[in-house]
Image: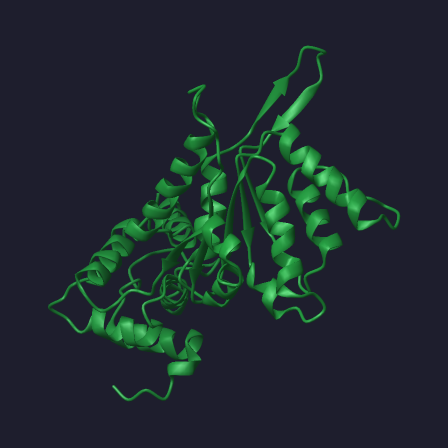
Length: 299
């Protein structure tokens, strides 16, 4: 029984993810974009919507993209000729670095489950195949993660990179381009791009009630054997955790995982939870181990 409790606690810590308001806001926006494609009004000309989702490192962009993809799984469609087609309503692709057109479209083929070209193909050949499959597999939303790689690659101009996104946006699907705030310069580079791509910013948590609610949700999801009081505004914990993590979910998750390593819960040999009490001291030790950039902050 104890082993099961330990195993379940580890699983909750490893799978920790909070669907806070910024997450659900973006997921709802994606749902709305895809819903627009499904209209049956004969008088309505479908014009797919596209979006840039921006935020600093650690705010949860990749997790938002990955988990939205998992929430919207595909299925097998059998056409009139008996051919099985893998339908993928949502596809998630991480851009290559350095960014090249060839690698970009090869990555799209891989995400669609198609074999990549084994010889040295021309860019146009791979691109045509990728565009054909995106339509054949009825992709509604194509998520492009790390779009900032277009900006940071010196071998290709921003205009060339954006033209590839523009070509994708012309085939009847929605694009969601994720990246750091650096990618906004791509969107603002031309009025045509600006009008075609909406924008959404994911911000770090400020030290306020929303942050306390987030920390409280973290504790509720973990279900620790002993109360921690992470989101208790009557303690110093919200203030300290915000100082250490800069209000970013990724650093908070790293802190939580490490603090439970310190008390032994994550060890393979852990056989009881009697020592799994999280204190301010153990939180500080965890901070010093995994958030080294803050190790010189005086408390």
